[in-house]
Length: 319
Image 1: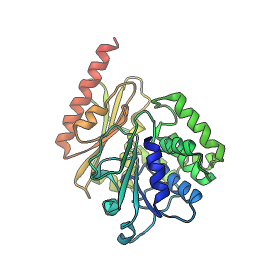
Image 2: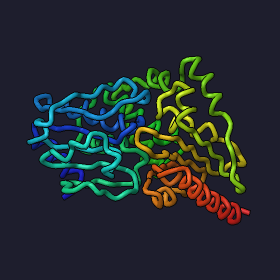
Image 3: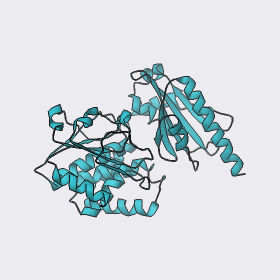
Image 4: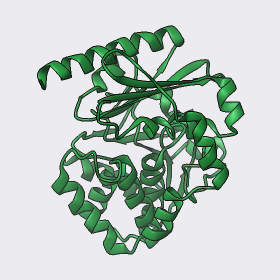
């Protein structure tokens, strides 16, 4: 049976559906989760549909539900944009009667007893996978749902710069815009910020470089506190402060997470596959945009060495 049809049949068969995604969500995690949630509610108004997980200032206007454990007893849990247990927000998906994973990353899953694991890295975002699912089964879509799904596609492709299959992505982006997403309001959200935040970015404007021009920053807990920004705004929000420089093919942002006793690394590249390096350290993601949680600053030095070697290989092959 078609894997999407399996998911469609499970959605139809359950009266309670609870949708999860990864911790510290980016807009694709929120967009795929919330877009699917709103779409199921629109097409099956009699069903009990919930969304759970942590929020941050990258969550747009989404709100999460505060639900009791007992709701999972006869529920279907759907997990979007993540397939590894340590990254799923709200571990109670394990309490559900069945579990479905919808993910576009290259990682395999370590979630136990999964009814359907739908992984397809030819999609540039999880939101794109949801749009494709919607189109296949001709589901009704509200403007609000369309906004979240379009937003997930826009942001996870780096404003359509990182594309695995350009024609498919643009076809699906065109399809979801038929449902009148609030594009301008969302763009205002992602492209404007308070003056104080813009000024605060000056704290993160400098960087260091390896011998082969891998740019990197190390953000310790003291700097994060001084900035007044939340963790995600520093970790993922500042990585592209180093982007767009001709001489720099790879850039990395390392941010100290005192609460979880790890160093969160965000890695980006221009035309160089680096996801295998992220996987080596227990992370993953996309070929050109990925990340990993590192044990300490010594491990940061190890991954910088690996990234520097990759940059050196790239330079030799392009001379």
